[in-house]
Figure 1 (cartoon, rainbow, N blue to C red):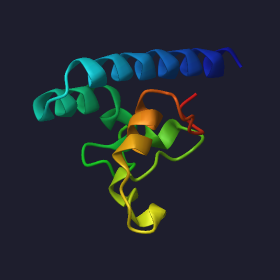
Figure 2 (figure 1 turned 135 degrees about the vertical axis):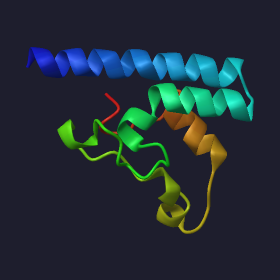
Figure 3 (figure 1 turned 45 degrees about the horizontal axis):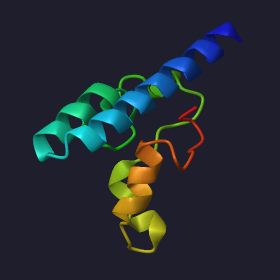
Figure 4 (figure 1 turned 60 degrees about the horizontal axis):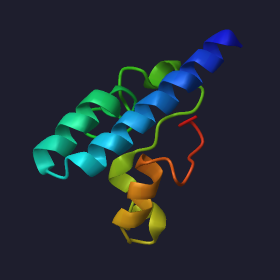
Length: 94
């Protein structure tokens, strides 16, 4: 249980850091850097949900390359931004 709480704390802190960086550095290079630091560990370098931590998680990370496919072909950047900054909770993100 303590390990789970610790993991949730780390995930929450990472989400807060991602949100702060996303809004403070709206550039492609900044986004790539932020993704590499905070997201690729679980979602993988290409966003397919196959990062090095994926195998130890209780819920498989989402394949981010399929966001539009899961939403009837529509990619809504506002929804993605709300997920990244924690306004729209996602199971597995703590």
